[in-house]
Image (cartoon, rainbow, N blue to C red):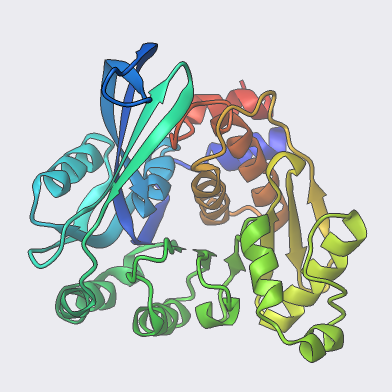
Length: 340
């Protein structure tokens, strides 16, 4: 544990950039004691309501809560939700100089109503506008990356499938990261993981990794030793994970398996199984954000990938014991690894 402690002590002030789809999350909590006379639905008596950064902003939130100096890059609308999200980011000491306003769209917003620790309904609101997004990228986001990427130690790409991450943005990030020798870590949404390019690590969950396997032709799967498109039995996980890593040609692949922990695959190394350390699993939403945040921060602090994966696993074990997509606190992580 002293090895973990020495890495965690170096978290403070590490400079990371997160780019991706930013979301404003709202949680409305209350209790149910009766059914509506207007329709057969429960009436929730609201007791608490609060906002948190979601999507790529939750990755940034996890990094900030662990002591990193983090800058978030993304797009919001010129609306109330955008103003609230910016306020929440500033409150959490997340730099917002890379957040750009697009009056042609609305801020992505998700509201969850929870009663008796059970989510009853989720309301999503977004207004896709690819043309406006392209204008913001070309005029503001890509110039920002060209000016500032050299100032960071690790780049995190958080793709939630809302069009922020596209081939043009990826190409620009890769060009600059190669120039400045920066690790790039990706939380994916695309089925064809090759589209993310030659990155340091991709961190799909089980469902995303299986979708990636299915996107590969049968002949190609056979050529790379991929025996199926499932990740259930240990033999399948190890064979298919190694095959997917070799197919992608990237440095490493970290597949999260929910209550079964995670697997790290690296070039020319045996697969590393990291068993879950969660004492209780209450809510897995946001766990992937915590994993990639902790993993990337460990790399910035000088950890090797196996150590980074183990520490990220401890971080995930903390957040799945909480309700909602929330960040892991530094003291919580220290307690989890036995550092305090």
